[in-house]
Length: 117
Length: 115
Image (cartoon, rainbow over all chains, first blue to last red; front, side, top):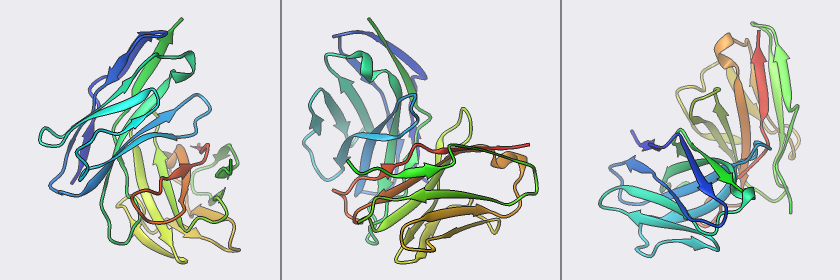
């Protein structure tokens, strides 16, 4: 069974600074997807960034980037120029590649990020 | 931007009662999901639904749970006889197509409290 581990229950960062959230996972699959989701106090889970395991290039979305180390099964999220609106719970998630096409996400326990003005 | 909407936002029910959680997925989406998050724990997959049938379900999704898409717009999760341990946040999600470049869109969740 796949597992996703986020070892940092809470993190804080000064506004405008950079922070990295850690995630490791365990799988025997070679094809899969990895995600970072953000859950602000509004509770809605919002996709931040996605990485396909077959792609060597790290995904980037504006201020958000990942460091994907497939051999080490590590998938960290870097937030640059942190903003107050980045304060939220961040979940790392894994999904196997499914020929049927549906995602069955396995989530980590989350990291609560606080942004200090 | 289209959103997944869930109602109610908070539901309180007594143990043993039936409860129906409602979701309106994004209109052109084809894949639908329910996840739950017990307070302080991980978000867990319950079930996925495609082409009017369950495509995958987890061990949590036992005979007490069922899903329906009765009218082509709503997607419901029914718990027949609620238990205390069913208290959780329940998230609905939808996906436009079952491909890797098609992300899940989540609703705001329904907080279910079983007393």
